[in-house]
Image 1 (cartoon, each protein chain N blue to C red):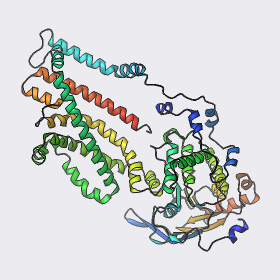
Image 2 (image 1 turned 30 degrees about the vertical axis):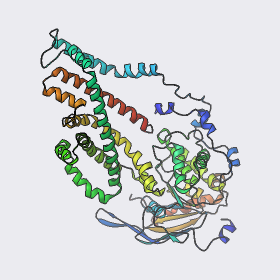
Image 3 (image 1 turned 90 degrees about the vertical axis):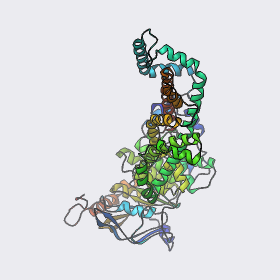
Image 4 (image 1 turned 45 degrees about the horizontal axis):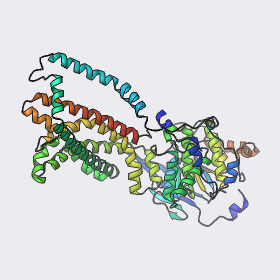
Length: 273
Length: 310
């Protein structure tokens, strides 16, 4: 964390979840997914939510995106309550949620058009720019089914970035691509965020410890339906994989986060799933 | 897939459409210098020469490729049927119930004005009915897909009404609207409407949660959601329905044209069957078969064009 990031901190956090509780009706009985979950995210901060499968991290993200409403508690952005999806947030899902009937460029343009009233030409230019930035130059006129899984996810990222929303929500965006592509896409995301001077506030869901350390400023471990542990990641911006992976503190951080997944008896939290 | 690739723009065109690099957030200059981590296949693709666009209609090439090769089995079967037919009638000139092919062709040539008029009349009737059924069915189906309450109220009733043959309503339609053409349109439209409605509803139900969530997080207006998400999503289902319903539509056509019409392929067959002129009945049947065949191909062509993204 740089010093001015803390000193410039406004009174109202960019994003705040306070005592959020959510339960589902499943198999005839009510199942509580989240209980008294609270955390705040500062402007420009990158926060990762980690935890074992089914711990409610994706559900938490769906509350922030406005796809779900909490039973009680409050989700607010800039101090105002969230009451549905909004133009201030864009979401990247694990499974390439592109519209198959739109070419790559159209998919990005369509996203931009929902949040901007720019002219058609400017929108096209912006779509082309972001597609080029995610390494898809020359592939703008292909349909999603003509692209590989990794490329489709690049388009999703390009769309979310091109919308230039203040908040970016990512639900295991690299969970469905192969290991090599994942590394490339992680570096790409890091580079793009640094390039834009960390203007965007990001909430990122993952279960990959290395990914969380590489990308985030803070890691929130979700267990027992709430934030069980908060781990700050003390790397200065601009970050790069090389700086982080070879830093001495990386191993300690990795162990700290790794141990979170095991209880006092050394039993893995997600073992029953 | 291969077809779609062939249709791709040339590399040159793609390059000229590249975004201007100024006025963008971030540092575009740096972006341009920095080597992008690209997928492995990218470097290899870059050096590939531009693929030319499909040039001109190439009508002859198309005819020789598509018509002959593609329809060879069909042509063979039709020839076989004709041969059997000719053998069955021999050189007797055919019988009362089974006229000789030559006699049928002769009738077709003699009666070509009435047949032409009939084709035109039936075509207009079919076109209007298809457009109406598709428009109303898809719109209502998407509405039901979006509004659970409307679906709950409407669909059980629709399912109960759908099995009633639409021809049964014909007398009431004539009494109400007083026009035979409108009645014919009504009968065919209604018959097509049910399958289109039900299939659109199930298309919306089959929409993946991911796609729905994406549409929701993009904060689409109702109109945008209908036009840009739900409608294109329903199109493959619609084309499936229509290709099945083409033959159903012609069954309805014959029934619909029985009432008060003076031209139409269905009317033609029915009219001459009533007069036991089976030569003309045969001519009409052949005309209908050809129309159905051509309609199916046209529908396929339109589908391939509209569903290029599949």
